[in-house]
Image 1 (cartoon, one colour):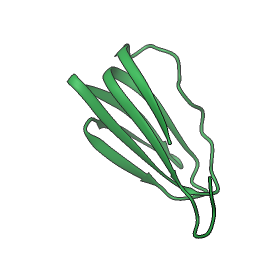
Image 2 (tube, helix red, strand yellow):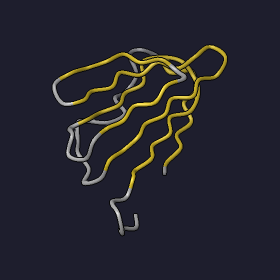
Image 3 (cartoon, rainbow, N blue to C red):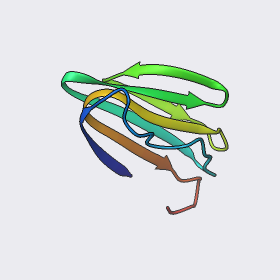
Image 4 (cartoon, rainbow, N blue to C red):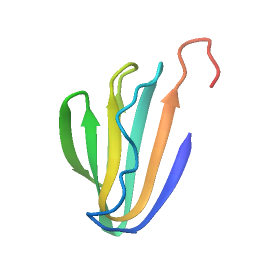
Length: 87
């Protein structure tokens, strides 16, 4: 699990991640402060703008990226181990 604090992000800020994959399923959770938090989520060839409070399920092997667009809050990443596996 990773918890990232995002403070006063600007739309023209640096990219957080490039598209990548994992061998396990992943869940991303956006928890916004009072003003909210907005991310661009890439899943395969599709891009989505999502706002807090929300969660995104990413199956193992799916190319994905998550980049903040605006706001403040927390971006939580949970990687789900396969049965019998420790992370």
